[in-house]
Length: 209
Image (cartoon, rainbow, N blue to C red; front, side, top):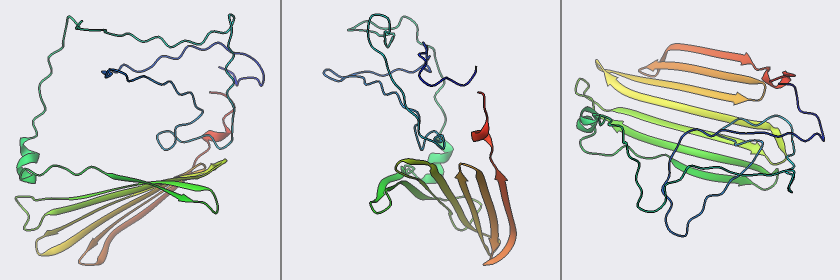
């Protein structure tokens, strides 16, 4: 498919992935059309615009398969329930915590950041101390400047083995034109292994898709 021409009208049919949802009485579905869905999808490094034409010759419609009232699907596939007994045993009945999400705003430069963070401990039978895990990520962009989009994520792990303290750190930064990854392993606060990776991205310069 060639790049769309400015001002030209295109007829498009977009198929959604299969999913299901039960609506409560009084609830509604809303269809949103956007050029990006950051941080779920990385935005293009430039601003764009979508114009929808209405009228008899330009019809917009959303077609959904629905089950109304008491009607039920005639066939239900049988799936085996996942066995979480081992994890539940390690966690001793504790539930894995959900990530805490925050939206931070810097009004001076118009920067918006979505911050997610989670941490938990997993007791392991063969270790005298638990495995301590933590992870956080920041997805930020300056309003009106999609080329400034950036995602940074960091994962940490710490445990005691053979009388030595191990610490693992992995950091990843993704921008429009590059990705950086660094990994490090420390044993008793001394660097045992370290490696940095960096690569330029050129997907924004493609003329066709």
